Length: 269
Image (tube, rainbow, N blue to C red; front, side, top):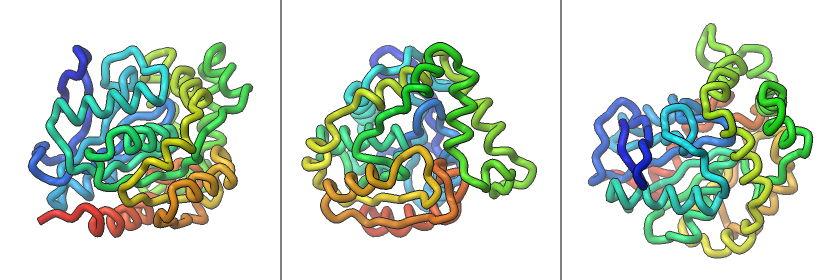
């Protein structure tokens, strides 16, 4: 569906069901350079189990009007504006990679809006390799190749995904090319500049979940361990065979972990 926030057009999928702000809502956030489609399988699952669903395109990504937002803090405030515009309070936030930093900041700034947060492959902060950051600015095709090469584990590179005949790498390339030209660099620069993770984590009061990829080459284990430490007592699970892009590489295991956590912490009536 389309709606306007701050005078800009925003797109979100609703999982194949009409959006109803009277129901508990599961909001899905994508990572750097990606869009709503990373959550296609999980969003439909919740939509058909009496949740309202929003799988958003951040500004400047695929169907949402640009420009892309330049900081994690600005993205968190923008997401709160989405909640305000749609009048939703009973939110379980599910975030991947960069989206986790946004979710962390949102939960710290606006605790009354969020019932739970699921962090999928994230650190407390996400410094970006200089080669990748410079390529995103000067050689976008090289940056896309780096992102997809590092982002997917063996299943992605060997075309062993859950959808027969579908290449996750080719799909990721198409998405990144479809964003506004500076979206990937803006996203990565925002991640690189975000330094408020420790302070934000200390303010998160809702239940949290951390899903770790056993073959993640984009978020170091020590960064994830630091997130877990500062969140206090999150529910932690490891999907050992997956690379960084868990929602696509291991969608069934990811869905099951999300289901168990959200059903417990934000149940439908």
